Length: 95
Image 1 (cartoon, rainbow, N blue to C red):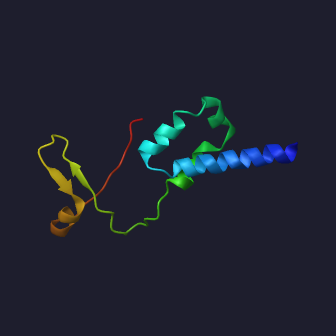
Image 2 (image 1 turned 180 degrees about the vertical axis):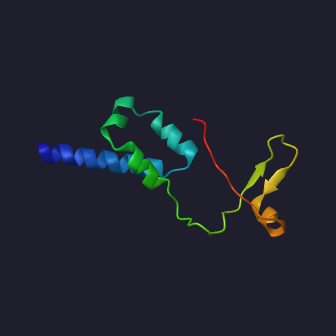
């Protein structure tokens, strides 16, 4: 019986880890179907930090992206910006 419980726990943890590595929209859609109690049974934070860590190191060139400015007056593409001036990226979340 203990072996079955360990197998189910491992399978659940592997499934959650796989879901955490999906794009945010897909992760959200998957997690919408997961009961809240399931989250308390797994080491969510360490799994999340590992799944979302990425492979960039300090000093690496950031992946290219294109975003609107806060006032939506233009789009900023990082590959165009860093050619003409230094670029500092600061990311945060208020959630």
